[in-house]
Length: 275
Image 1 (cartoon, rainbow, N blue to C red):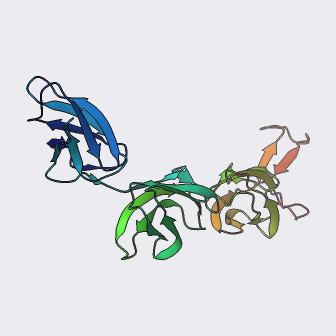
Image 2: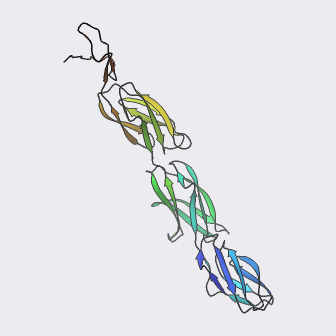
Image 3: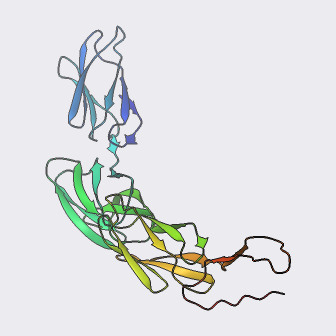
């Protein structure tokens, strides 16, 4: 008996060929706990395939009960993954695995911390809930280990970074600014602080929020806009100098002209000089 590949994860197609069997006979073929029926040709050869769900010996048995065993076993490689792959902090997602040793306890690690253990009773697959901790955004992974702390499989996933976007990112005193946040803990409460003023927003189930605020009466310059809550994120807003508009670009002596100033601090003195 020959087969290929010699190893693979659950769902791998394993191709098996045999020779030297009685011609035109039914052949029982076993892969671990799975079996199928093949037929030998006029030369005593057969071919078949399995979608592997378990590992183990590959055995072919003819109608008279005679058996042939492949020289090595098919190795089922454990596999683990997370659904969804991309997520936000503080959200429950699914950790799934297949191809693990039956009747053994697996240990689940996030970084150096053991977060759970699971006993595989008469099965080689599992599905558990995993609460994504509050961590910086980026690619993360979970290791599934055995009792000897040997890593059997690793599941990668992506945590969306916590960001705050300001639109526009610069303006004058009194302007309306939209704050757009993403990647925050779902259904939590965050506070936006700018120039001594604060307002509260609630991220939705996807960790996103939108709110508006008015540029406070501060001197021109660059200021931090801080979002605090379970995580802390900082953005920058630039307050521009006030603008001065004249009703006419030229006038005769004695004619009136209207001067309009926008973006100045309320109730602050303004000096107007004619040079």
